Structures are given as C-alpha cells and as structure tokens.
Amino acid sequence: MFVRSRGDLVEDAKSRVKQVSAADALRDRTPDTVFLDVREPNEWNMAHIPGAVLVPLADVEEKVESAVPRDSKVVVYCASGNRSALAADTMQQMGYSDVASMAGGIRGWADAGGEVE
Image (cartoon, rainbow, N blue to C red; front, side, top):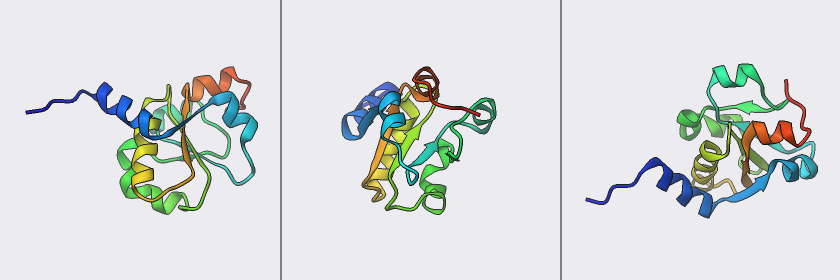
C-alpha cells in the first residue's frame, strides 16, 4: 500500500497550480479578481482581505461553484499557502482555468502592504 502524507499532497498540488506571491497578487489585482479565503470562519474573523469570499477548504468541492463563477480570475489564500494550494488544485480539476494559490497567505498579504479587515 502506497501511503502519502498531507505534506506530500500539498507539494503535489503546488507543483500543479500557479503560485503567486502576495506582492504580485496585490500588484496585479483588478476589480474583477476574486480573492477566495479557504481558512476557517474563526480565522476569517481575525483578519481577511476586504471583499474576499470565504469558503473553507473542507467545503470547496461543494460550495465554490455557487460562490465564485468559473470564468473569474481567482486568487486563493489561507494562512500560509498550503490549504490554498490544495483548494486551487481542486478548483482546476473542477474546470476553473484562471486560479492561483497565494504563497505566504494572509500574513504575506499584510507584510506586502495589503489591506486587511
């Protein structure tokens, strides 16, 4: 039996999805860019990107289609960039073509000068 760790799954996802830095996401965002937060509600309540959409990682497969149109430019973020890579990988498999995982997560966003609420 072949056993894979969560770390293995994250690294595989990162190899398949576009990774953007928080500074690049901040610089390249447009009014149509959807920032998708895949953290848990308690994390969202502490700080999130203004206008972001919350769909926790565990709910992505079930709820993302009703929250984010498939033709959107999507930047997925979490706390550090691991859950966002898993979510972005899932979204690509679901047919989202313009999706990226934000390396460094919300902390990287704040460090790059991005606004949080």
